[in-house]
Image 1: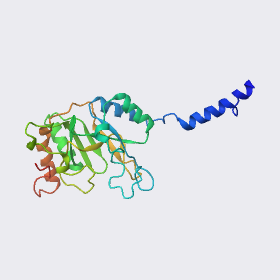
Image 2: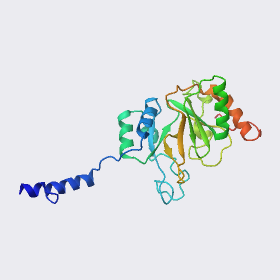
Image 3: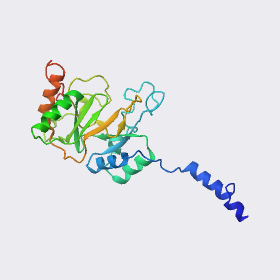
Image 4: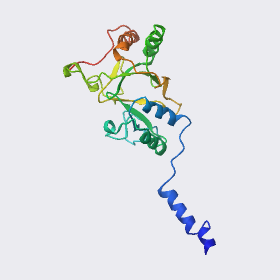
Length: 242
């Protein structure tokens, strides 16, 4: 009887099979993915899980015609869900091994989002001039993200705008100028994968170990570079005040 209990077709084997079905081990993560995300959270950038590329509609959300495949949060509660808690980020990474991650802006940091060519030009000039530049990420869909301190909420609320006055984070229409992601917005953080199957994604140019600068230190250089990028047809687009 004891032999039957211990055998592969006995009670122990059936229990082991049931446990594997009902509570699978967390899948192995890509090399370096978990440390990068944990470093991002440790730098004070709150994270939440996002969709990832998938066959069919191109997005794991399975929404027909998803306007931002693999670029949006998986939960409508992403703003309150976003966290820098190491244990929570570890659980997400290990139990959602394919998920991209977004960082919610306007809490501890903002993101100045510019066309890739303009961003590279501005970054080169900023570094050459000795300006303190914080974390910078590139997205292979043609954008560059400059991470900065958040403006917070000034005493005069009329001098502050939510991101949707510039454009919603879901907007996929080509945007020739600068987008200021602040309250109510988010961006993908590295390492993230984009649809297409050619290895496209979002990756760090300067990692989260760099201190966040004041946004106004970068704003003039970025808007100038954006204006040159669009052929000098006026200044780069950026938010209106309420």
